Structures are given as structure tokens and as C-alpha cells.
Length: 134
Image (cartoon, rainbow, N blue to C red):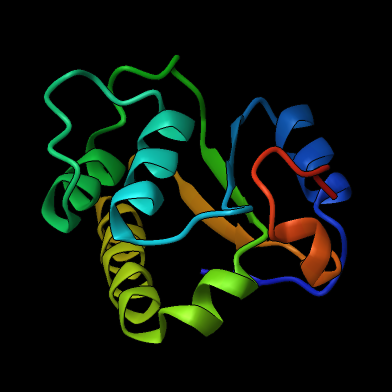
């Protein structure tokens, strides 16, 4: 997982130009693990089998077969800092799940997955659901 201090626009544009599928996980207003996993599931357009737990998220990040074929996928996570600050243990678990999936993709050498932690807007913009995306 990459922390990028810049707005995600250029990374998204470059990924799209390269034919990658781009996905956004907006964590504005998320208050707890269940909502965090729902947001990830919605962003990934997971199938109905998605169980809404850490293992299911890990499986989904490794599978991604329901997404259109692409040379790679870029997942941009926005408004993550308030969640990371409020639930550091869950945030650490999320990072571990994502890092395991990223390692799987690196080892497989078949396609690519990258996850970008985008520059976080001011805290008041990230506190409410549906806030503007950077």
C-alpha cells in the first residue's frame, strides 16, 4: 500500500491511460469495521458471496475475477486518516490484509494490483459520508 502525499488525480489518469481498472474506496464518515468492509465491498463491486470479514476481503482482493479484464487495477483510498486515527488496530489489520493481497499479486506475476492511500482532505471534509473526493 502506497501513501502518496499528492491528490490522486494524476495516478488515476495514468492508470486509466494504461488500461487499468480504477476503483475508489471513500472512507468519509466510516465508523467501524462493518462499514469499512461494506465500503471496500461496494468499491470492488464484490459478488454476493462476500462475507463482510477480513478473510472475505483478502479473498476478494486476490480474486477480482468479476471485474473487467485489465492489465492491472488501482484502488485509491480516500478519507482514510480519520478511520486510521480512531481505530488503529482495525486499520493495522486492514493494512495487513491489503499487503498480503498485494504480495500475492506480485508473486503471481499475472496482472497487477496497487492500492494508493491518497492525500487526505481536511478532517471536516472526511467526517461526513459522501464528502467531496479529492
